[in-house]
Image (cartoon, rainbow over all chains, first blue to last red; front, top):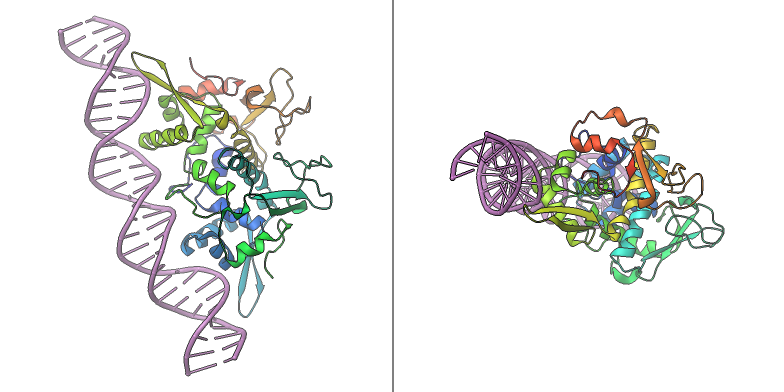
Length: 174
Length: 174
DNA sequence: CCGAGTCGGTTCGGTGAATGAACCGATGCT
DNA sequence: AGCATCGGTTCATTCACCGAACCGACTCGG
């Protein structure tokens, strides 16, 4: 969500969650983090988000303990943003929203598909592996382009790197 | 979310979903609809939302096929907003967000608990009944106040009616 | 018949967040 | 020295949100 991000005496848990991830752009940033984006400039290139908004959201997410900001090299100083355990717990939210969009906006056409790493079974809407029936954690989830992937004609480096099947949370670029 | 609700060539399903339910207040309206709120004035009383914003959101949700606006009495004309099948499919999103807030913002204290109607088993975070292991649909879910319910000191009629255990989607007020 | 109340909105002025473009400092590359 | 990259900040403009007031259709009580 956006403006005045508090929901007052609103009903507990859902409202509290929305105060954090309900702001515009926030969930897309978190999704990219799952897909392996870690650097400011990569979020910027992939999301077409105003720089000031990206700075603000990253800072909010770090303060909320969803992302960890770490300097991965000195000289020149370079930062990266990585999901914390608390951030990884947001996966069911991302998953369920993507699922709803697939079903009701895209007529069932997925632009990404998820497989259980090692097992190879596809991961169903509830997050269960169709082959071994286990609940698949994000770091055991492999993402690959689905039938609807070509709907977007983006050609930036991040988009290209994302087309390559890879595991969630693994860094996309060196 | 708010401003300029489109996310351009952003990655398919999640972005499309956010364009609808990502606007400020929208998910809280949908949540109230699950809890049985149906009338304009009841949403207004329970959410402390500006009237103009409520009108706008309801209209958007109706246009998106998430809510159905129906006149339930002529003279005086009275309208009610009821979740469609497409709207009911949003339940996993609400559930997963509420779950995250419970765990990470409220330290595990739930202000509402959910039971499998008829069976009586509690519904776990993934939506499975702890007793019969079935995936519990919203209309088979009974909601009751949890340990953290008294955190909010609201006293409007809608809040009071909501304290009474009842099934999701059933009208809260006559 | 008059006045007050309810419901479901619309209208309007002020505020403040989002936007996009420009700028900036530290560093590396040639 | 000159140019490029990274990770931002600053700034003017735009536009959605906010809250209060207003409104039309109707009912109810006296």
